[in-house]
Each structure stands twice: as structure tokens, then as C-alpha cells.
Amino acid sequence: MKNKIVLLMVLPTVVMSVFAHKKDPEYLKARRNGGDLRMIVSAVDDRGNAVTNASVKVLMGMNFREKAYYVTGLTDTNGQFIVEGKTTGNEVEIEIMKGGYYRGHDKLCLIAMGKEFEVTNGRWQPWGMEVNIPMRLVINPVSLVKKKGGVAVPESDAWIGFDMKRGDWVGYGCKGEVPDFEVKLQWDGKPVVSSDFAILELRFVGDGAGFYMDSTTSCSDFSGVYNASTNEVYRKEFICSTTRRNGKIIMQEIPQGKLFVTRSRCRIDDKGVVVQANYGFVRAIMIEGGYNGKAEMFVNYRFNPTPNDTNLEPK
Image 1 (cartoon, rainbow, N blue to C red):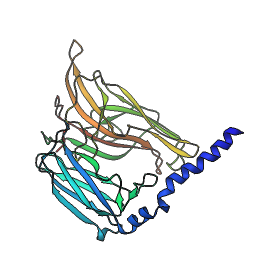
Image 2 (cartoon, helix red, strand yellow; image 1 turned 30 degrees about the horizontal axis):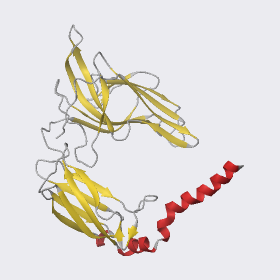
Image 3 (cartoon, one colour; image 1 turned 135 degrees about the horizontal axis):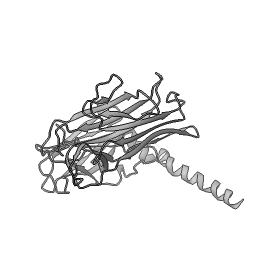
Image 4 (cartoon, one colour; image 1 turned 180 degrees about the vertical axis):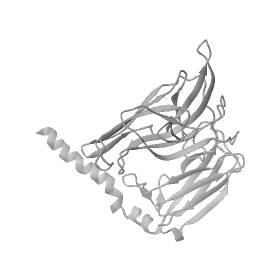
């Protein structure tokens, strides 16, 4: 009984903390007319070094888009630019550009439900907040095969080859010729709104083929990896799924902030060493039940069609 009483006492405290800003006069005034914002924007390269003389453009949101305005300037010798102005907090969009670098960007919302920033003396807090924006070098972009979208899975409970170069299945009257990986689908046949499960097993074909997980870089026009590693251990199998539990859809897919670097079409010498392969990366792969009686595999990947070229920086 004591445990139940404690729970009832804690719950209102949590709810009040989430909605406290709704009754704060300072916060409400800033939301209506704008509060002062001071923000230090830092442009940093892949090694954390300052990027100087980069062009900064910051949109200061004022509830209605036509009332929004821009603050612009250049980063100093420390790679920083100080932004000052009024905003109602609905959107603060940052863009940084410089020749030889990919565009860096970020979007802040100071009024996100449950994450509202405080306002003190008409100022959004923390006053002088710091925002680091990644500026990644343009090194050697190459032409990569791009695939993003849904592909209907032609058959269930059978291993089906998928050609990353062609972006299609092997067989079934499709355009694929060489299977880079295979998938096997299990699905209850219901559309996504009522489906209880859709499971896609993925496996890479042949000795040496597989994938390893790497990190993406957020807030950059180039968020992938520059090159595939030849020293990583390449895993063979992955399972993605969409299941329903207690009325909620639970998805297992590539974790946020990660991607898969792939190796396929491998040729192995008599010592078991990979002497030829194609490389790529997969941002997303997931499975959903469809309305047309077929499930769809959604993919987002890049594939380098040149054998032994580990470059994954797309043009």
C-alpha cells in the first residue's frame, strides 16, 4: 500500500515539471513576442579543428515564417560566430558553408514538448549556449549507385538474391543479375496497420562478403564514411522486423546514428584472402506489410560499382 501512495505523489511532480513553462510569464512572453538569444556557433572539422572564415546563416524563427529573419556573418580565428537576436523559439536553423567543405547545418527547437528551454530576464537560457556544427572536407567524391525506396518482396519463406548494382531482385523477371545479399521474408499477410509481424532475414553471399557497423555524422550534407575498411570483421547476417506488441509497432532496424558498410562480389585466393570485392554502405533497411498482398523492403544505400575501390564518398 505504501508503494502505491509514493507513486501517486511522484506522478504529479513529473507532470508539473513538463508543463511548468506553460504558466511561466517570462516563457509565455518570449513565446509571443520573442526572447533574446545569444548563441555561439562553432564550425569544426572531422578532427575537431576550428574552421575559420566560414559563412554562417542563422534563421531566427518568430512564430510566423514571414516574420522570421536571418543573422549572417563569418567564423572568426577560433571557428566561432556569435549569434544575437530575438526569437520565439519555434525554429532556429543554422547553416555553415565554405569552399572545400560539405555544408554543415542544424535546427534547434527551444519549445519542444517536455524539453522547453527556460527564459530568465527575457533571455533564452542558457545564455551563450554553444552549438558545434561539423564541417567535413570534400576529399574525392566518386559516382556511386544510389537506391532509396521500397521494393516489393516477390516471395515469402524463400531466400531471394538482391543486386545492389541494379537495385533489384535476381530472378522473378526482375533486373538483378548478381546477388550481393539474400533475404527471406516471414509475414502474416496483413497490411501494416493491422500486421502483427513482418520479419526479414538478411545474409551476404559468398566467402569474404558481409557488413560491419559504423557511425554516421549528423548535421552534415555528407554523413557517411569516406572509405570502407579492409581490416574490419565483416558479419554475415542481420534481421530486421516490424512487430506489434500491446497495440504498438516495434521496429528492429539499423540503430540511429549507425550505418552498415558492406562488402560483396568477393574473390578469394587459395590462402583465403579477399583479393577482389565491391563495397558500399546501407543507411536503412526495414520491412513492412503492404496493402497489395505483398510486403515491401525499404532500402537506402550506396554501392561502388568499381571492384576494389573502397571510396564511399558520393558525388
